[in-house]
Structure formats: structure tokens, C-alpha cells
Length: 318
Image 1: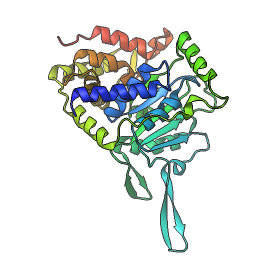
Image 2 (image 1 turned 90 degrees about the vertical axis):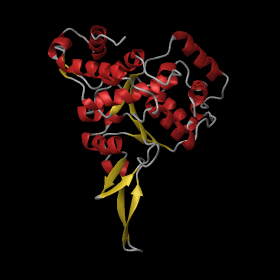
Image 3 (image 1 turned 30 degrees about the vertical axis):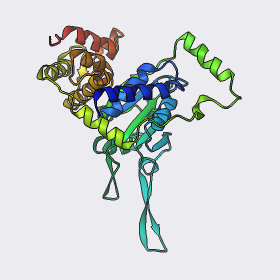
Image 4 (image 1 turned 120 degrees about the horizontal axis):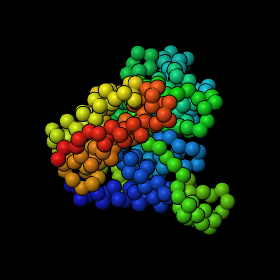
């Protein structure tokens, strides 16, 4: 696969998902970067902003197995991973696989589950395998988690620990569409029978497993100049020395950004990365990895505000 074919493929995916999900082009692009860079993504936004719908659409157009887990306070790790049950007929234990054995896993409202259930995803996110009763089970190279959480409701939720947040490539903030887009959504729905929403639309399969493998190989071939790598490291290290940040980003974050920059460059039709690629991804890649200090919180500054200041203060390569 060459870059021109890849851009055509990406446009087809955008077009198919965009036919169902309107007004979320930025979200779709971030999902494309994530899946092509082999990273997981956390979507945060109020209910009704198409977070679940866009995950379902993505699984349809890329022809991958899709599983969904609705995280609740009573969800147990075995409900996600699976359990070994004893078969009295064969006198053997048999693994009943959980929903994690899929390609794309939608972890819906992940912050509603208790920490022990959230931590069941740690090994899967990092190593793409799970351990059940001492036996390792691979999940495949295409394993990809799309997690959602609602920032409005705090009652009955459990904030994700920093170690788990660090395993998400991006945290994407999903907002409401603009006024005209909302009108267009309602106009389209007005022509359908009640209860027959866009969530049931059948989308065309655009990419199969072999094509996805070819895309991954193409992304792996994108050149990263030493100046780009140095720029990424300087930005990550700057988060550790900033007075407004109590805990900065890790080396894992720098490595993840470097991979995402390759995918971003390929989507732009280039076989090399430029500083603009880094600048476009640095905030969604770091906003969930930082812990702000008291001074920033007192002044009401967000992680995005702090990262924007840091980005403006760090010289980009020429």
C-alpha cells in the first residue's frame, strides 16, 4: 500500500462513518490515528454526543470483531476477562471467554466500575494478552480499546488511576455539535420511523484485516527525523519541570506520541513527520497523563491551558 491508496482508504472510512455520525470529524480523525498507531483511546463527553455510536461505526467499516462492556459498580474482573468453569462430563476446566476476547472493545462508562475491575484491563492494554488462572491468552495484534466516560456525573464513579490513564494513547474531549449540525441530525431522523435511529444503519465494509496489516506496515515506514524525536522528548520533559504540574508525563507517553505522529503524517500524505504533527497531537496525548499542582488549580487552569502555554514556550525545530 502506498500513501495515495492510504489517503483514499481513510477518506472512505471518514465518509462511511460521517454518513451516520455528523459533526464529529475531529473525533473520527483521532480514532483513525489511534487505530493506525495501535493505541487505545478514551472518549470523555456528556451523554448523547455519539461516543458509543462512533465506536460501533468504526468496528463496522474496518471489518473487525466488536465487543461491548457496560461498566457498572457491580461488574467483576471475571465478567470482563472470562472464567474457567469445571465440566463434570469431561472432568476438565473449560474457559468461558469474556467480552475482552475481541478486536475492538467498547468499555462504556469505564469509570463506573470499581478499581479492581478497571485494573483487569491493564495487562490487555499494555501487552495485548490476558492471564486467567496462570495461563496467558493472546488477544491479537488488532486489539483496540475505546473507553468512554461521562464528566458530568460523579456519584457512583471511580476515577481511573494514573497508571491506567497512561496506557491510553489519547483522551479526546467530545462536545455537542454546532446548531446547524443538530438541525441536520433532526431533519434526517424526521424522515425515519420512530425508534429507527441511525444506530442501526448498515455501513459498508471498507477495510479488512489484511488491509489493516498493510496500513500498519505503511505507518511503520514513516520517517521520524531526530529533530522531531528531540522535540517530542523536550515537550514531555518540560511537563516534569513546570511549576504548574505536580506530576509530568512518562517516557511511555513520549514513545506513544512518536508512534501517533507517524500515523498522523501518513494521513496527511507524507512519508515523514513535521513539527505540526506533534503540535496537533500533544494536547490529546498528554492531557490525561498530567496531575496539576495547587497553583494551577487555584487559578482555575486546566491541563489544556497548561499544555498550550508549555507548547508556546518550547521552540519547535526549523
